[in-house]
Length: 310
Image (tube, rainbow, N blue to C red):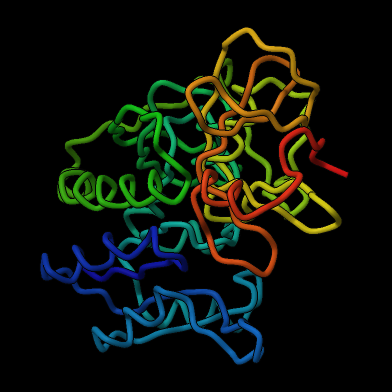
């Protein structure tokens, strides 16, 4: 069976690795074009491209799969199935109709919840108790195709988007190991998604990371986790950015203005919010290293009592 694999970020790596280890015929890997990165703005390849090169797999990098030349190149590989894992482009109808067994997408949410660009972060922001992986047959909608299989895991209090994405990437690879042969053999009946429960996750921007201290401590805590590692949650102090790397919500009774820094009973440092206190655990001041909030406090004069965000 001839497979074209489409993906770009690290989330896709375990699936590609397992396809090769399971001796599937991966005839090509399709990933995003190289792009400038880092201070030197040198051209950087996607994690999927780097892995594909290590595995000696052919790599194609179309700027758009709506381009006729890109579609012609795909046709030349004669795929029986196309497997997609966080590729980053919407496939046209001509691509979807190309393989005999369709285009299979691996989506890190329990569809129809959190369709769209940022499903893992959306799950944390929503306070979901569980999330998971959905393997679906693609159609021309945005993550609207019928589901072939799902697997779920609990969302833990220490889960960030980075950590949760890593967990889901491993689950996705193992789930596809079961799904793919059964789908090819006609043993799976696709299940249409219920539109009634559908939600959508928008792409995250850098501005999303700025903390509004008037929000409840619980909401800010979720945002700190959801926006780690990117774009990170940050506030402002003395004209410099202060990143909040780790935090936890507290509900002790204490008067504290929104954004006001206070010493907590028994030690530690917290910030007043619209509802409750957010205990700061790990911080990074602009231009400095990451450090424990208590260590940061000892190194900064006049920190207690200030109002963050200005």
